[in-house]
Every structure is written in structure tokens, then in C-alpha cells.
Image (cartoon, rainbow, N blue to C red; front, side, top):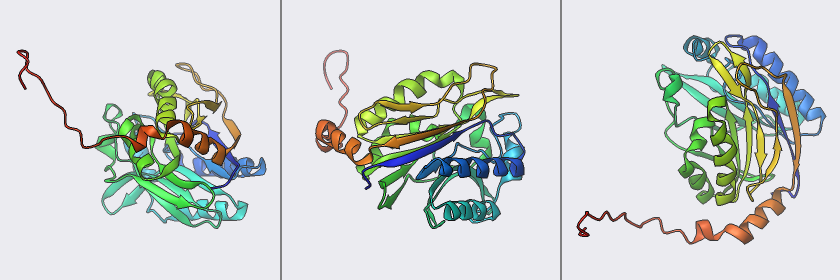
Length: 286
């Protein structure tokens, strides 16, 4: 793990149904973040197709490509040409008859080092009718960042996901999101607690702005293993669409993890996962 890393996050509102335009926008934002010194660039969830609930089934289907299709080759070439790590958000992945919401991680040589298929589909917006869920969580061992965990939006709302990734050794979690304004309290309260309780850096890129079905929060953020908000982007109020924003954030990667290890490691080292739950009846018997 490196001592210091510069993370770049691209926050914007992709255009629903405009896959070619969205790819061109994403490549431009990646290039600008690399120019500003980012070692690792992170994009939001489903940026190729946008996240308009009314048209998402059609938009995702039209933007779907195989895991190593033309879009992945363009992203790979971008990472290689710029010499950066690229967590390319999540994309609609076509695998036979199945459509997945899949997060991609490329290294500095443009190799696809890991991918994660979103395991928890958000039924209130109909994701479970569009995508097939992944069947596992995902980590990737790297020299620069240690073990990296990948999570997509609703995955991270489940505390057991962060804990499972931590028990697998992940001290950096990358999470592309399309998080709505209605869940702002979760974004602001839950995730710092997860970072603190698991001793992890969380780097979270979110869509930001309003389309025909609602408003996506923005507030892309970087959280330290001590639960501190290291950086946070602007948010969208209901009905608003702020301009896109680029965050460039230096992280004391090794020192942050070391502080958490010293202060909070008892939370994962002394846990007793085999404890059963005992339910007492009203008369005190069990």
C-alpha cells in the first residue's frame, strides 16, 4: 500500500439513453482528472445509460455491452494511455440473456483487474425487473491500494457488505452510485459510520441532478477509516441540476488505515460471529 494516493471523482448527470455521448463525456472527465494528478479515477453508477426510472429498462438495454466489449476497450485504452487506475463506475453488462449492473476496475496498464455485479438490486426503482443480481462480493489485491472492495450503490446500504469486505482484508471500498435525494440521511449518516466501524477508506462517486423521474443527490464523497468526511461534492436539491464537478483528493492512505487499526481493530478482531440469538417468551422461558 502506498503512503499517499490522489483520488479523482467525476460527478455529473449523464443523459438517459445517450450512450455514445455519455462515453465521450466520461473519457473527457477522466482525462481532466488525470491531468490534475489523480492516481485513481472513480465514475458513478450506470453513467452510460443514465438513471431515469421511467426509461431505464430501455436505456440500459440499448447501452448494454459484453464485459470486454467496445466500451470496455475504450476505457482500458484511456487508463493505459493516461497511466492511471480507473474505477469506471458501473455499466450495463450483457452476459448471454442476462443484464447486469457491473462495476469495472482497470489498472495503469489498462488491464481489467476486477469487476463486480451489483448484488442488491433496488426494487423501489424497478432494478430487480431490469438486471440480474450478482451472486458474490468482490475484492481485488493491489500493490498501490492494498485490498480494494467493490460495491455498487444499494450494496453498501447493507452494513454486512462493508464488514464482509473488511474481513476479506479490504481497507479501501470504491462505490459508484445513483443515490437519490430522498435517501440523503442514509448517505450522510450511514456511510461515515461504516467507514469508522470497518476501518476503511470509502470513495463514493454519485450522479447529480434531475431527470424526468426525480433528483439524484450528488454529494460524492471520500470518507476516512476514522469516519471523517475528507471531501464531499455539492448536492442537488429536489428539481435542481447543479453543474458537473470534479473532486481531486489527496489521501494519506497508509496512515489513515494505521490509525484505524490501532484505535478500532477490536471491532473486527474480537467479534463472535457464531453467537446465536435467544428469544425469551413473555413468561421468561426460552
